[in-house]
Image (cartoon, rainbow, N blue to C red):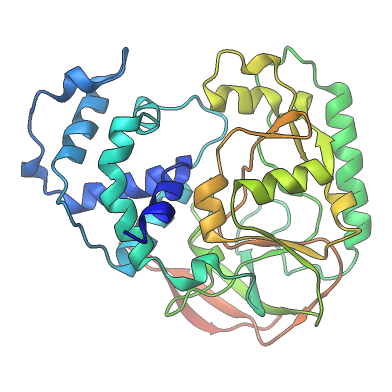
Length: 348
């Protein structure tokens, strides 16, 4: 089966397993989940919820089929539910075990067969910046800032140094859990989903209750240098090439998220985005890269690392290479439905 290696790779990542489980729940009718003596297969200490999940997986059809629309809706739910500051749930622990993972394999194969081709594509030529309207709680929700990236990254680097210098190692909560250059005033963009609006409208980790947004089409300069994160190795190589230790500012959150009792002794690193900017203008995380990498504890630069807080298909632009590529548009969330509806062209 030619799709098997890609399906197995998908199930190696926490988000990939969550995607397949979400789809499995939509494939199995409620009446098909029944007590079938599966509790003996459960790892020690697992809950009844885990038992129900295992029963659901055993009730899956042998050759399930899923549509692109189903996959996108499940992906949206998985991204919105991602958390990097909580211990793994019993279900997450269960899905990491060999038997449940094997039971999910037919769903993973169906995802690989139906997954949109753009999931593995490099950053699209035309990108969209999302401005959340009427949001006063999140910095950087105005129009995109297309100049001053160097100064923004310098401030970001100084803020990391301050966090590392003032956060005690024994802190129970660090308040930081993302590995992106957030709060740096450098823009992040996503492509449009074919047949839908920009991906950044729907695939958002830890979202607020936004109902109105404005999107700005942007285009990178010809020859812009883009680093592609397609899989865990791509992320590990980036961290290894440009390591920045963040043990004090992020280590506690990620230690809890890892669920490993030894995690409090680990050192943690992310890319030094100011250093990355010397060699690359942008860094793009493909959807496939997100599903395979986000939330995993990985080795890099003699430390541990985690890709967290980064939306699928998103590119972070580290240098001033973007320019407007059209008029902005205003969108509103559709009540009771999945997705957004474009309202009108907006005045910048």
